[in-house]
Length: 326
Image (cartoon, rainbow, N blue to C red; front, top):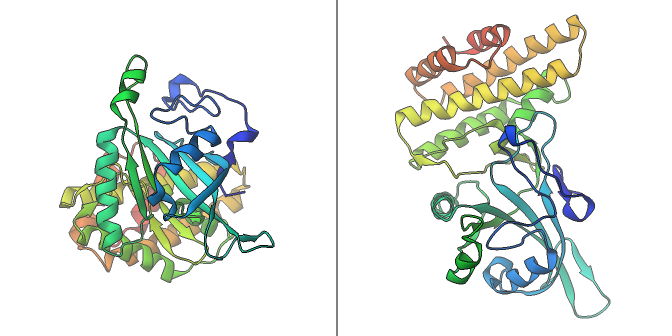
């Protein structure tokens, strides 16, 4: 079982409350141009796109997973699926020896359902970063709707495309990492903060601003490698976009931590201690950021938080204030 992903074969169809504007179906499959929750349909689709499976012979799709967010995580605005399948290939890790010369290799690919213009843009940005050696999921291709599919679905939905990419199995998101630091479930590692700060600066140096740099979009792998995902709102880097990237990352992560701390119903002493730890880890993180960016940028991030971050409580607003480099 992959962290955060659930097999669609094990859940019943449901629809979230419309008020959340996060409509997600498991098992209904109304996702043009592909009924991607049907493993057989996925299998047929992958047969038509051999580059997605490294030109190896596809044997079967073993499972399709949907992402199910944890407490206080956000539902994705796009439907994203993890597809697990077997190919015939050379022996590697996770291979299956059937007692003959045939080796079946388990592979994973992610399919993200997006509007065609968004898919084209995101693939372009992701390809640029990947080819520059920047840690993003390897892009595998973009499947656009065909004319025939357009005619079939235009009556009920806007045609969609499928953005394909490698699956990144993560240990933590940045926001969860920050939470675990605050409650003592992880030890503070300044090297991790430095890696994240360097990662953000390197992205900007490649003339890309993320546009939606939430803590959930920075993943830590089991090898302590940090990867950035979900580049659908990426834009050309400019000063205001850099301010917005850090504004989103800091405020979104702080709100996530605050909600989790309150949900744990800690006693007053434990809650106060967690707040103190949050201030400490935020200070350390911002110190690492400050070594990579100009102080004026951090000043403007701070001002933007105080002007616009209305979701923060006064207590957590003060924590951020105390953490910012002076």
